[in-house]
Length: 249
Ligand code: ATP
Ligand code: MG
Image (tube, rainbow, N blue to C red; front, side):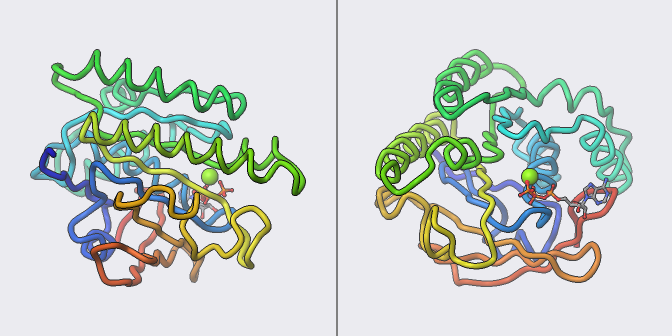
C-alpha cells in the first residue's frame, strides 16, 4: 500500500476536519441539495491537485467524468486567478486547463465505461510530470436516478452503482489518486438512498475508507460541510466560503 496523499480544499477548517485534506485511495462523497456547492468544490480540487505539495496539491492532473455538463473552463480560470493572488505567483489558467481531462458521460453505461478509459489515461500519464492524482465523478448518481425509475428496478440500479463504485475505488488505489464523487440529495430522506446519512451503496465497500461530506447552504457565500460517519476521524463541521476566487476560509 502506497503512502496516502492529502489534497487541500483551499479552506483551512475544511482541511483540518479531513485530517489534512482529501485523501488518496479513498472515495470522498459530497452530497447535498442543488446549489450547495458540490460542483464548485470539484472545480477547486481540479485546480488545487495540480499545485506542488508545498501548496497543498499533489502535483498531478485530473480526470473529470461530467454527467450533467456542468464543467466550466471559465470557472477554472477564475479559481486559478484566485490561487495566483493567494500565493503571489502568476499561474497560467491554460496550463491548468490542459491538465483537466473532461469526459462527458451520456448515460450510466457510458459513465461506467469511462472508468476504463480513465485507467488507460492514468497509465499513459503515470511516468510523466503530471500523473493523474484526482478522479471526479460529478454527478455520480444523476444518470442512475433518471434511468432507473420505480421500485422494481431498485436492486438492479444498486448493483450497477456498487460495481461502478468498486471500479472507481480501484482506480484510486492503482493510481494513488483521490476520488471525489457528488450526489444530489433532498433535504429530507429520499427514495433513492433512503436516509442520506447512511453510506451510498450500503456497506458493500466493506473495509474501504469512504468519506462522506454533507454540504448545506448557509448565509450568502457561506456553506457548511459536515463530515459524517468517518471510519477514522471524528465527525465535525467546517464553514467554507464560495466566492469568485473559489473555495476559501
Ligand atoms: P447541483 O446539485 O444542482 O449540481 P451543486 O451542489 O453542484 O448543485 P454548485 O453548482 O456547486 O452546486 O453551486 C452553485 C453556487 O455556487 C451558486 O449558487 C453560487 O452561490 C456559487 N457560485 C457559482 N459560481 C460562482 C462564481 N463565479 N462566483 C461566486 N460564486 C459562485
Ligand atoms: Mg453540480
